[in-house]
Image (cartoon, rainbow, N blue to C red; front, side):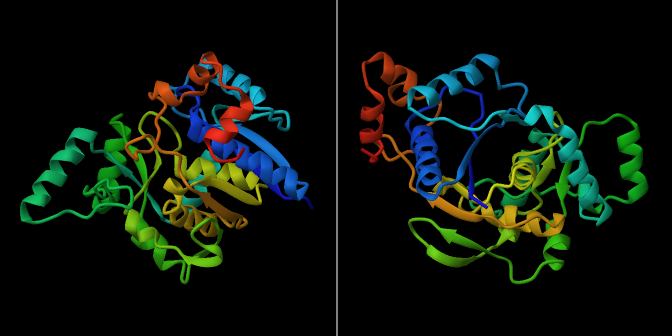
Amino acid sequence: MPPVFRFAPSPNGHLHLGHAYSALLNFQRARETGGRLLLRIEDIDAARCRPEFEAAIYEDLAWLGMNWEIPVRRQSEHLADYRAALDKLSALGLVYPAFESRAEIARLVAAREADGPWPRDPDGAPLYPGDSGSRPADERARLMASGMPYALRLDMAAACRRVAGLTWNEFGERHDGERVAARPELWGDVILARKETPTSYHLSVVVDDALQGVSEIVRGQDLFHATSVHRLLQILLGLPEPAYRHHRLICDGEGRKLSKSSQSTGLRALRAAGVTPEGIRQLVGLG
């Protein structure tokens, strides 16, 4: 069967040069291998995702000369798929409710750092310091029944005990065809469903890739370490393992990763300034 690739932006802002580079790499890989290219709209963040940004994604990618298979998968239309995955993990005893607010979590981290540095995940965020996972079952049930908002977290220690020797196949610029050792424990008890959203990035991306038959994931180096969590979830949920190809990031003049708030590197601003699709390819090193 032909390989399957995907580009999966979030419609919470306009695309920039970094998105263009990742999208074009997926498009190029699909053409080189005779594969299929899917477009997925990751719109689970209802507070930030907007229809006009989604429309702009289609317009910008078409302007770049890309095409993709129809229909486009929109995550907000498939919440039942993520619920089914959560139910499976819950049945394994690997999910627990966490009731702390962001402010409470920040206070807990600050209190623990009075005795020394608190561990951070590979992205630099402090690991979850709460005690929700150790609450008695009857107390959890009481809090949930009271209507108190809660997130669902993965019991990372319990999950890791179920999986040994976890690796992935990496074909990126830093690891060409190597089996890379996964270390999901570095992320602590990651969120699987947020208080305001019945899923999370980690869970939805793993479920979507499996349901869509994605066989090669081409994405930025900033998600390299997150692959450890994704591989763990794939094993726990009995999902197939894709190959991974993490590419370099397109950075600004000060070496920082581009953001959607950066007007100077936004595709729409560059188009308005007269830059052509071929010019975009040259700017990202594909010309």
